[in-house]
Image (cartoon, rainbow, N blue to C red):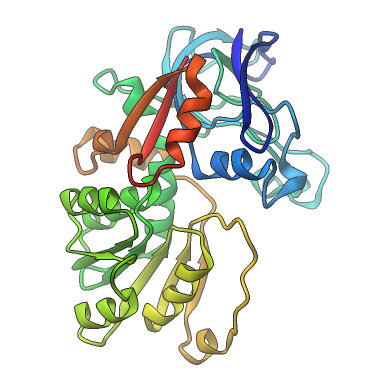
Length: 344
């Protein structure tokens, strides 16, 4: 099969590789569309990851935001059929660590994640080693396109972050960073009925999209002081919840300034570099900082199916697999791209 194989910083090549095999507890999927995630971009730019022990290394096939058709089913899989249209994710826990022994494999310290620890979906086919319906394999509704299906994974991250934040109708939320997950978080918080959502971003294109997607206030952080604008927009009460989706030191510090006393900071973005900070301000304000690694896939699909969230406008570019290098270079251009898809 053809696959986009990553060998180092900026070095991704489309090659012929061996077809993946179906495992007894897994399925084989023909990939129809796969989105480029921020974590894929970190690996593409840096040649590795902020979590190097989780990365497969040179020769990695990335890609974990995908949809497609089931073409083969393992002998031990009963609830998934050949021909099913699906969205899926995959992992390989070690089976031996403390968390695996406790029956909590997703907390495994040596877990391998699809597209990072083992081959992903920037390829014609992808193998899901352990497949369980509505746990890591989800039906793609007939009325939903494969392209929109490929946005379910980033939307699921936003759903997880928003539901973990436990927003109330009177809350004001600030979303820092209006990439795909920030755009999804904006829509999810609006769908959950919060009073106001403020979005801060440096890309004019992404700010225009955020406004079109329902943001109450948009802040061009390249031209304005986002802290001062949030102060004004909240009448000096500051934000109840700050969703930090940019993953850069500047927005990390802004989140602490913008959140009210007793508020919550949801850490969603993946950071490429370490941060120096003084925790005293978080302690004094009695702020809760919550790491957000998880996905609410079923709720994400429901948000899309019912029209409460619309991710189609977030898809800015589509490329065939043969142009994977061009696709990655396009995703780097924040004034042009939001979500870039690769379609084998």
